[in-house]
Image (cartoon, rainbow, N blue to C red; front, top):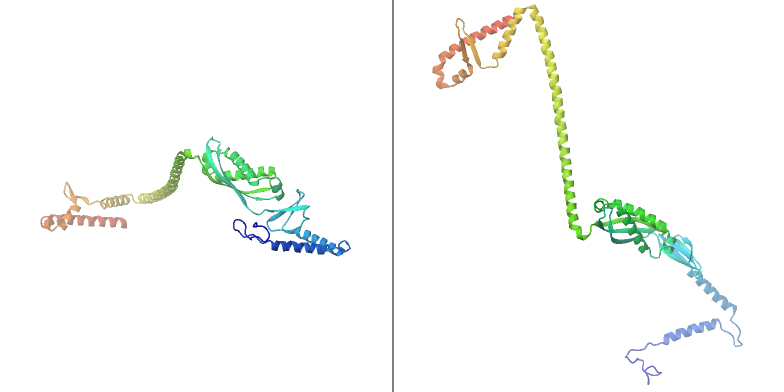
Length: 372
């Protein structure tokens, strides 16, 4: 007896247990019975009742209306198509469309999408630079995004590469790999958005980021040396500027100090000259009143000022023909020396007495002159 014949084994030739189809058969029988009851006819072959037909129509209408309801969430837009042709865009909330005639495609317009690519490009000074950049975008027109672009990411990559090639072709390599990334990214974004608007792509470019810009690997070492040399140059310039900023204020302050000192010295000389002139004028007036007294007074004041600043004294002894030189500094030193006191004390005392007498007579003469 074969394995699949009635009454045969419940296993297939490979030893697997066959599935029992009794449940499926029962389900099919139940559905058939329901339809027969819905459209049943009497023994004479009468058609189905109106009640049964109306119930069936109501069920189909309810299902049709139910399946036509759809909900658009926040940040999304619903693009309604009628036989494949654009009809309208629906905003967030519940909506209904007649199915079969129309269909809806939900587009997330708030989602930030991004594409990234790397390419080798030529700069204005005919150098090759490897650029790795990323573009972030969202959707500003859902219908254009669906109908005008077959592959949005591929279109954006091609347009982005074209835009950045045009921008790099107008800049030199040193600017591209150093401080020009932000400027190049801004120019590329503006140009790319213009191109996408011309395509009516419905894409809004958020940012363009230059992730990496460097020369090819074959000349990487040479460019690294050039960059280090440029950095050393800038460092030396900064140090020189710092030294200049330190020295110049000091020099200006010193110059200001010298100028102020010169002004003070000028004022001092002017005031001193004015004082001397005034003193000379008053002295001249006194001289006109008493010439002899004034002349003697001037002589004594001059001698006093000269002798007051020296330790050497010349003495003119009355009745003598020679001047006597008196080294007072040496005498004072020898006076403090105990070993030479006995040898020099008589002569020194005699000389000192003479000096004291002459000084007292000089002072007396001066007092008499001032009293006159």
